[in-house]
Image (tube, rainbow, N blue to C red; front, side, top):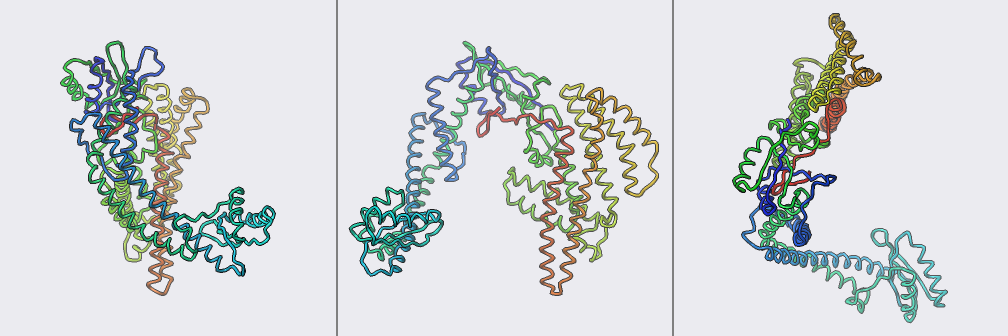
Length: 633
């Protein structure tokens, strides 16, 4: 369910505004509402030049401290600033920022050095090999260049250009592949022409392989040995840098945590003052939202802190401002994990129905109805129980684990009802269905699936009526109720007899058909009057929504058939171990599909066929202004 909220209007003396913001930030239940931008009578609180400068500085500090804390895995511990003043805070942040930057830049420099040394090593190795492969007898100078493979043709052009520009016929260019998409080339020419060729290469925008000064005077054969020697020291340099970082963390971890806490609080309070606080000549004022159950204690807290220097007034939200009211879910612990499934939608409008308990009820049942295998359910339960144990309490992974523990449990239950475990393996071992054999009684499974559809679609339209009634949309509520009556009539007069016919059963009560026809006769003109003359067609289109639930049967049967095929293939192979391996792989694939398909189709039925009938999005999440929280409106 959605928690009831109260709108709060607070007015106080301007001189108390900073202490007021600190107190509500500390208490942490007030969701601040941004001031209207189009109201000329409402004037936002203006920050002083000192406050604007402080906010700008602190935002910069906050970004840097968060980056450092993330890199070092330091969490905020709310240890407080222990009375340290703002100048000391600024000095500490600067010191930490500078020292951290030095260590990180040193690490980057070492890694860059390692990359360059490796690149030089590859290139010089290539050049060395080219020198060895050169068959000429003359003693020539050389120049190394690198180009991409796409630019390989430029080497022939360069050779002709050298001959043309320098009048030098004794030019050879030989090349070899480097790693990636680059080519190393060796330009061989008389020693006295090398400098001119270097200038020409530069002018043509070709990358010359510059040998570092440290290695320039070494013979090319010795360069590789020198590079390898320098590369051997890189791990030692990196380890030394890592120890520096560890020492830095040990020395400054508490300070970083404290500074994060302080800087974030100060920055958020200044931002709130600018965005959410209005002012007159002598007063400040604001609007916000508080959960109804928290208001009494919140108001008492303000009175104790300010001794009558402010006035707080609570107001129950009007229906025309429900879209402004922040949403806070208040569900039983058993339902809460299923709130995760709603996160893909914008929150519902305040005052409407929270669908979380309905998802908790329908989705796991449909999942179990589709997969319906005791063996797969037991394996899935173990896998998701392991995920539950490894995930952090309250995390998204923990919620996913709980959701699928419920789906696995219903899979086990339906597996017992169907008498299935790893396809028909259970049947071969003497296990019998407790209720129904779905491979032999397909009609009953189909009818059951459609009945699920009738229940959810009719329920969805009824909830749409309730939601519109709660929002004060009287005419639309009447329309939804008329649709609900029509769907009940359609179900009684047509869908009921069709399902009886599909199931091969007779004796459908004629009185139900008559009641259904009467309800349709009432509904169709009412829907046309309340909406438009095409609206009655929507009642008939809902029949398609209901029969869409037949996919529950189709996916369930495909899973059962794949399980049977796995056992059949395994049994056809004479070698026991090989046959078991094949069957195991088939069952593993079927289990993956058996988790994926029912999840997608089960959620599709909830979100498309069910939610579309009643869910009204457009709400906003409750984000109280507090330490470690958010105050976006």
